[in-house]
Image (cartoon, rainbow, N blue to C red; front, top):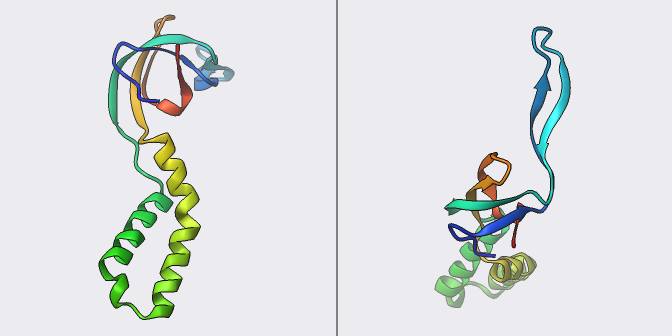
Length: 124
């Protein structure tokens, strides 16, 4: 998606914030959340989210194959190619989606959500 500072966004799903606790009794009396559709503005875009294990493994194995594949025994090279093939759908999905980031969003109702994964934010 590519979030940018100043971009208007809305929540794609409800985000749970905290339990509501009654004064002196300390009893939980409800649940506080931001509703899907709540709109706000991206104040800052933070760092990238880490890649999945499968994406990292795909990169490692393809690098290994490129560097040493020509010297490997055929059975080892074939097994390595099969492992890479099994990880390829996850790699393609990552490439199509691109790197994901987190952001700080100030919602119109005054709430601020820091470290929000871009997957839960929809551009307006």
